[in-house]
Length: 151
Image (cartoon, rainbow, N blue to C red):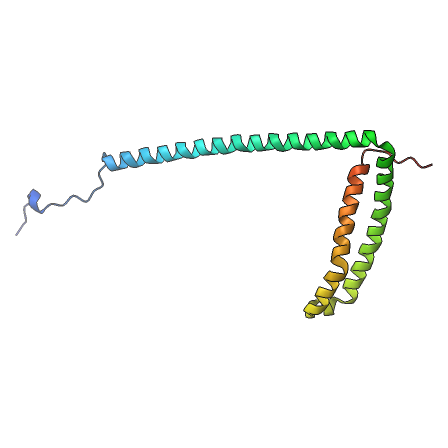
C-alpha cells in the first residue's frame, strides 16, 4: 500500500516557522534604535556637564593659586621662613616616622593580637601624626616657589 502525498487540509496544518515580515520585529528594532539614541543623548549631556565641572574646578584652582601667589608676593620673608620651617619640620617628621615604625616592628605581636594595644598605639601616634602632616602641608604650600637663601 502506498500512501499518496496529498496536501493536508488547512484545518490540520500548523505553521511553526517564524514570520519574517512581522510588525513585532519592526517595532522591536525601532524601540532598540530609539533607546540607543536616548543613551547617546544622555552620554552627550553627561559629557557637557563633566566639561563644565572641569572648567569650574580649573577656575577655582587658578583663583586659589593666584591668591596664594599674591600672598607670597606680599610676604616674601614670611614665605621664605615657611619654606625653611617646612624643611625643618620635614626632618622632624622623618624622625617621628622612624620611631613610629620601630614601635610597630617591636610590638608587632601585641598589636596583632590585642585590640587594647592597637588602640593605645593609635591614640599615642595618630593625632600627633595627623596634626604634624597638616602643619607640614600648610607650611610647604606657603613656602613653595621661593628658593631658600642661606644667610
